[in-house]
Length: 348
Image (cartoon, rainbow, N blue to C red; front, side, top):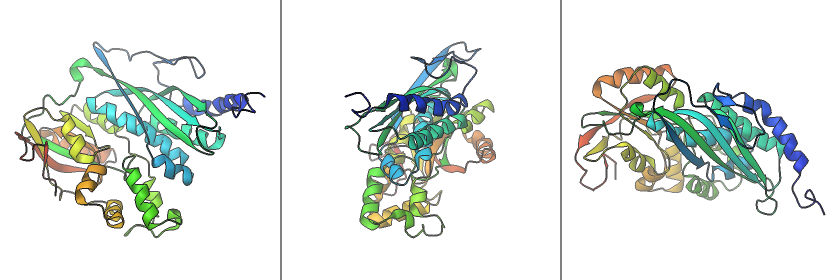
């Protein structure tokens, strides 16, 4: 016996590293030292920082991978992986510095995994983040044929006096919503259950969403939107952003309150935007209760900004200029809400 007979092809692994080298190099920042293939990636802190703070985050894509692998959408989940990590760390006002990935598979599939890495590199380029390194683990017998799992790790940097942690938020501040690109990468255990019940044959050939031409599966597998460039534009323009929230797992009820300090709560207007057709379809097809819908999906809101009233119009203008749909969704009010939570205005 040898390692290849046991299911691990070392030579194929080396060839794979060479195949993805150009994608990795395309994300390089000036602070990066060395190249792909070392035991550890090297990266300096950006020049000119006085009191730099490192902000780190880790996440995965979840069971969206099941659908993506079934329909061959490997590039898209690479972007998802970056977005799920980067959209978290930028809420502190930090600039993404570098990214690491971990790919685990039963048997190396060069075409599929190269597409994943190209998607990761694409996401990194979109937010100015270096793909510093990663690990591809071939684990025969642990993952089934054609299956892989992903994890991502992002490190960002921010000046200590530029840290955004919600402490300056006060009653009267406005809450701006920035549109999502769809379901993003949360709630797919429910999504897959709905698909199994409604379209067990082939969701790729099912009827399109009401009012749209694309099939439902296309809408579901749209990559998670990245907000790093928007946040950088706002902060460079000295927009006084006081708090930010990535609307990820748990939806608005769980994530918006995470950026609010003690003594205040958020009050949102659920009629300030039209719920995208995809979420209406999911609710109707799965007969999902309103409470579960809000606590599972982003419902069209991917990111939130909290800022003083005078900064609302300039912030909305910059959102439009950078290609983001945004609107005033609510405001910050003093005290707690009657239910004991931190978010008022929910329709349940």
